[in-house]
Image 1 (cartoon, rainbow, N blue to C red):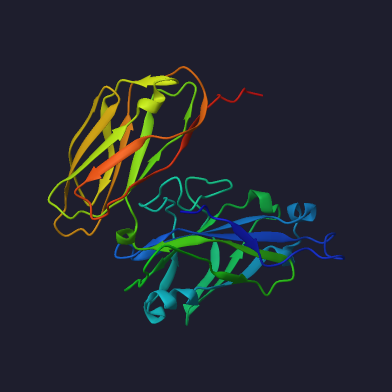
Image 2 (image 1 turned 90 degrees about the vertical axis):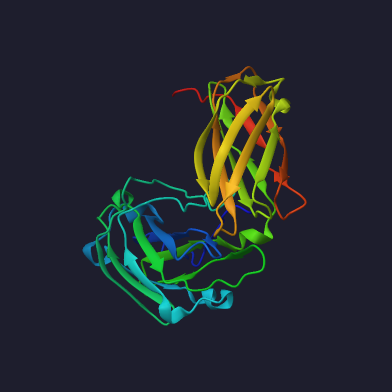
Length: 312
């Protein structure tokens, strides 16, 4: 999986840098085949130059259009799509360290002071208003709903074209992933830790069961030089099944998952308690085996143990 990157659709040319300009950046959550019926969109207003902190009244209203017709190539019926503002800001349930990263300032609830939002033929037209000082504007949250089919064979990277009819707006977009979990091998994502950490979170995406039971074992002995993990293993979040057991014996974490009969894939997230860190490290790698999954191979991602930042 690749991290999201941004691409700017415009730049501040000569003669415009001394005028008020703002950037409206679009972030889109990933889309998982046979899992998502909606996609979360978030627009981050920010200043494009110093004058963006002091917008005149005529530049406090912003018009943008988002072209989502790229979804048609994945089997999405554009006629069934609709969009609405939302006050809820939650990462998509499939979130893992390598999936789309959200950046910038994230309040508990995005601003929903949207003048108008309309959608037709795969185009979202949005009019929003921000304060005079663009840095005081909260993100704008939207839900794109109505996915009736996603036809994708492997993980692909997509983005929506974002444009504005306003001379003072510099739009940009960030990439997101469209994928079918059944095409991906089980992958372990250990969360990085600080020197004072006493827990570590492990996420396994995605499990595609071929039997009535999936058994996972994770060898954490690479930590022996840098710290200890005594446990217990605590269930954080499980989708597509029931985690019957989760234990640690020495350096081996063992889990037994009973898949849901109507689920095509599963995801497991647990927390290791009783962690004691002795040294920092980079690129540590656990080993994992999975029995009862359709894939013959697994992947594991590295993690770091970092020094706690010094307060300024």
